[in-house]
Length: 305
Ligand SMILES: NC(=O)c1ccc[n+]([C@@H]2O[C@H](COP(=O)([O-])OP(=O)(O)OC[C@H]3O[C@@H](n4cnc5c(N)ncnc54)[C@H](O)[C@@H]3O)[C@@H](O)[C@H]2O)c1
Image (cartoon, rainbow, N blue to C red; front, side, top):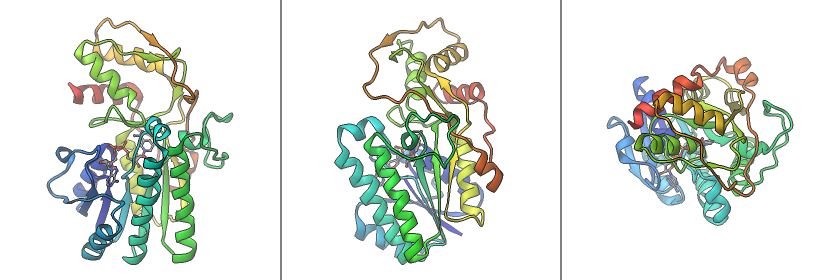
């Protein structure tokens, strides 16, 4: 079986590539290296340094490689940057995704798995943990773009019979994490604490997120690629809300240095709460989070050290 992984040189994509190779899949990576790194790439993967917005180049890769499956992780993955430059975000996340979807149809791909987002779609939900049925009303351009692609997937399935699975991730953390990504706070705090610098907590630190280990996210992608389930949307999270203050204290304990909290101004419009229910994927694909936060944070911190 051959799988194209877009964004396979990035944080989450490269871990998916590693797992697929370990499971003897043939893996082809499309990545522009805008945030991804060649060093993340397993040498057993075939690599095309290509921008997903380049329709012709993408179509050519699909016609050469004839993939069975596609795991679409490539994205401009920053909520904050999306608010500063919504056009660029839409260009990569909507138009880039469309060039992948068009090529999937032409190559008659058996399934595409799409990396969407939970927190940025549900916003400050009044139901915690939030289920997939909760109304999606994104309040950042990144969320709008992810939701658009979810709707295009529905369209491509209805009209062109392209099978899909949508995975709405919570805040993913783990080794190779980029400080600029969606759950960048873990990477930022790790790097600052290791270097003996003072991390700054934005606002009062009581804002919460659902931190899910990249290991569990990889397992969910494998289940989504391999299962017979199609045309479904699943949250990938732990269902647990963790405040930035709690995250900070847990990391300080692991690092073992006497670092005190220091607070800076709150980020305007920042979401206050987030936690995703994983009941649906447990029921349908028998996936559940397995890595507890202190253990996952310790592994992440070690990898940065
Ligand atoms: N990290 C999180 O907490 C989180 C949460 C929800 C959803 N997601 C989604 O998961 C996916 C992976 O995110 P990540 O955290 O690994 O981010 P990342 O930035 O590490 O990975 C994204 C990859 O896409 C590549 N890319 C970006 N623009 C491209 C383009 N135009 N053409 C080709 N390649 C391009 C980058 O070079 C990078 O390798 C993204 O779709 C992101 O939106 C991430």
